[in-house]
Length: 358
Image (cartoon, rainbow, N blue to C red):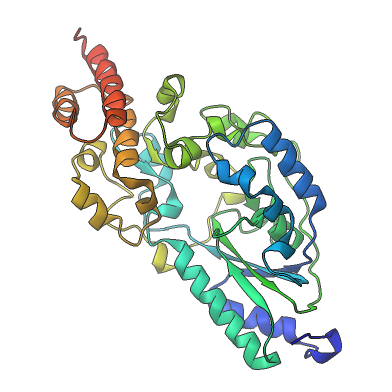
C-alpha cells in the first residue's frame, strides 16, 4: 500500500519515538534515502585500498550507495541507537594498563547486539503497521551493505567524528545503530552537525596511526580490523602495538571528550564469563569446546577459535615475561593451525627475550 503524507496521523512520528523509547532505543531520527556525498567518500576510500581484506566493502559498494537497491521504493530511513556501555565491567583503562589481562571491546562483553536490535526493530515495525496499515519496510542491524553512520548523521543522531564513529554531543558514542528502511513519507529530522573542532585526541590515542587522516580510517592498521576482520597472519610490525587487545579496540572512544560520562547500557550487554577481567593465560587455555560454549550468543563467536588463539598469542607476546607463559605457549604449538603456530613462535621469541633466554 502506498501512503501519502495526508494519509498518516499528524503525530505519527511522535508515536514512533514513544514506541521506540519503550523498546529500549535511546534515540530515533528520520532521513531521506539519498547520500551522494557519503557514496563518493566511500569510492575514494576504497580506491586507496584502506579496506584491507574486507572485500565485501568493494563488492557491495553499489548497494551501499543506493538504498533503493535494498528496498525498492524506499522514501525514508528510520535510524535508531541503543547504548551498550557495561557500567559494572572492570574499567577499560584499568584493563588496558595491565599487560597480563585481556582487553575485549566493550560492545562484545555481553550478548550479541544484532539479533536483539533486529527483533526490536521488527516490533517497532509491527507497531507502525497497527497504526497505519501495511507498509513496505526492511530492518537492518549491521546485516547488509548499509552506510549506517552517514544515515544516522542525516537522521540527526549525531555526527561522524574524526575517528569515523558516530558521536552524539551529549550521549557520546557507546551505542549500537539500526535502521528501518520504509516507504512512508515521514517528516525529516534535522541532520547532526560536526562538533569535533580542533580536537585530535582520537588520532593521538590510536596505537597504530590508523586515524592519522581525520574522518578516515586506514583499516589495514586498525586494531579492531586486525583482531576481527583480518583473517590471515597479523603483520609482524603491527603486533607489538596491539598490546593486550584481543578483540577490537576502544582507545579512540575512551579518550573522546564526549564520552566523559558514558550512558549505561542495557542489562543484555553486561559482561559474561568475566570477559571484562580475564587473564590472557586463562583465555589461551580454552579448548575449542570451551570457546564455543562461552561465546555462544556473543559477537566474539564470529571470530572462530583460530583467530581467537592467534590474537591471544600476540597479546601474550606483549605481556610481562614469565616462564609459565613460555610453557603455556610451547604446549599449544601444533595444537591449532600453522597460522596460530606462527604467532606463538613470535610470542615465544618475545617472552624468551624478556627473560634473557636465547
